[in-house]
Amino acid sequence: MGLSIGEVAERSGLSVHALRFYEREGLFANPVRRLTNGRRVYHEEDLEWLAICTKLRSSGMSLATIRQYIELARQGPGNERERLALLRQHEEHVEAQIRELHETLAVMRDKVRIYEDHLARGEADRLWNPSHPDHAADTHQECHPLTRP
Image 1 (cartoon, one colour):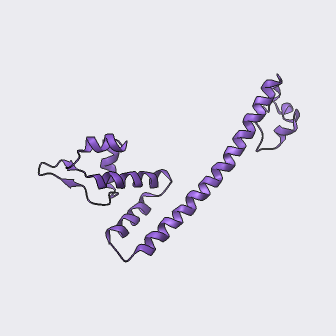
Image 2 (cartoon, helix red, strand yellow):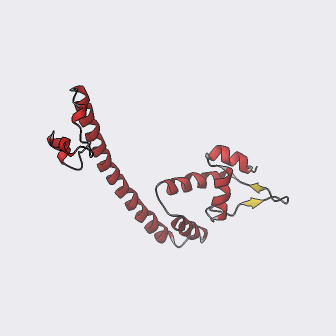
Image 3 (cartoon, rainbow, N blue to C red):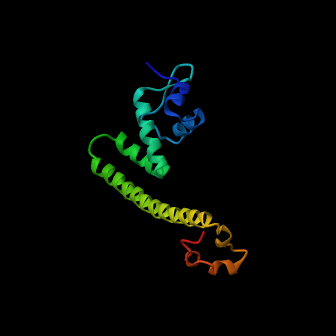
């Protein structure tokens, strides 16, 4: 049994507008079927693909790369190594993003610790303030650009 665009929007968490965009951009693994009255009809496999596709998008995969992957998949057997290469390349990209986020999180945790320490000691007014350069020398922590509050 087919699903309406509203049902797919509700189940996928995507808006009707986003679903139309995905269709326009050729991001469905299979062409969206239509009834004789023009209404779109989706199937469970469309929802499964949308779940994968939205993860690829949220991980930073470009629309062009997703289309390339879909086109390879549509061609059927014989290009699995190309699909794997495409996925591995993106996997490396995601791993680099994760490393960068871990580094960013470490900086944020350090900044939180600095603020908590200063507030606990009643010395919040000694935190680095670019408007008052004389405050920058108040603590050693504020001298390093990565740990500067």
